[in-house]
Amino acid sequence: MMNDLLKGINVYLIGMMGVGKTTVGQRLAKELGYRFVDTDVLIEQVAGQTINQIFADRGEDEFRQLEAQVLSEVSAYTNLTVATGGGIVLKQMNWSYLHQGLIVWLDAPVDLLIQRLQDDTTRPLLQTTDPTAALQNLLDKRRLMYAEADLHIPISVSDTPEFITSQIMAAIPSVLK
Ligand SMILES: Nc1ncnc2c1ncn2[C@@H]1O[C@H](COP(=O)(O)OP(=O)(O)O)[C@@H](O)[C@H]1O
Ligand SMILES: O=C(O)C1=C[C@@H](OP(=O)(O)O)[C@@H](O)[C@H](O)C1
Ligand SMILES: [Mg+2]
Image 1: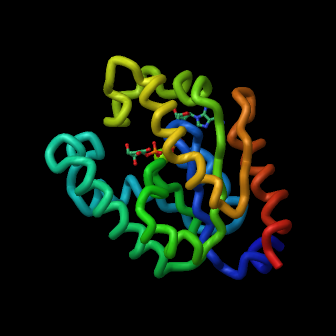
Image 2: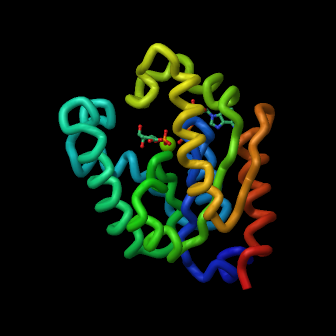
């Protein structure tokens, strides 16, 4: 069983906004017999505000501090599948927590991300006149950081959450000794 292989270590999903970390994470948790948490949801609970409100009232720097705090607390638990926010990779300190678990990079092209997020109002970093350029900029800055993941899962436009989950399940044994 997969759980014996993982020995309870957390699985962290990283990657760009819109790639499906939250959606796939919930399914993956069920498959693994893990609990599911989303760092954005925990940040909203700690702050008592939505992600949009945090960015508007406190700014991105304070959001990143809350994100780091939440990640450090999450990392104290075991048997979790964790959907992270796309920017979790930015703080070097966060990697010390991520690397205590298994890190999975969901990797999709910008046109897929924009297709999924074009009508979305919950990503403050995309509330600009050119969200495609914003996403491309973020991906250019972050790609090398995402590539530090243990597992790289390329995502195509027709891949269902079920299929992506099965890809991750199939790949996990290859990175565990
Ligand atoms: N494999 C998929 N196929 C189609 N739509 C998806 C898929 N994964 C996620 N979505 C949709 O794309 C949007 C972003 O997904 P989400 O899980 O919130 O991504 P993330 O947490 O990485 O930002 C949501 O509307 C979600 O329903
Ligand atoms: O990429 C980012 O910087 C962000 C991604 C979001 O989470 P998702 O990746 O789940 O959309 C959320 O944390 C915030 O809007 C910032
Ligand atoms: Mg999410």
